[in-house]
Length: 67
Image (cartoon, rainbow, N blue to C red):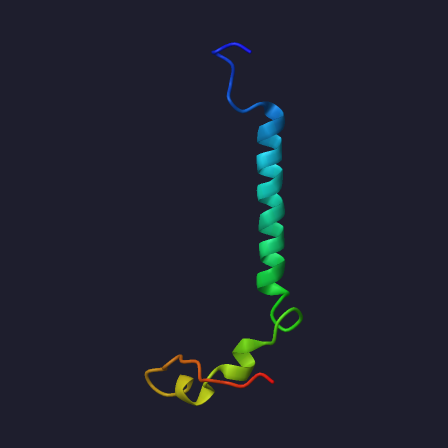
């Protein structure tokens, strides 16, 4: 190795970007598919719709029992 060599090789860059793409795909799946399948659908169960329909709308979550 020479002192002028790059710290990151091409294989290392490929692995970094490959893992970043993998993490983004997993994150999108968890965010958009996970609610209702992996965990309970929190929005439908705990969202206070009566306050959201008032003027001005108040978006608030109520304490809920998901059991």
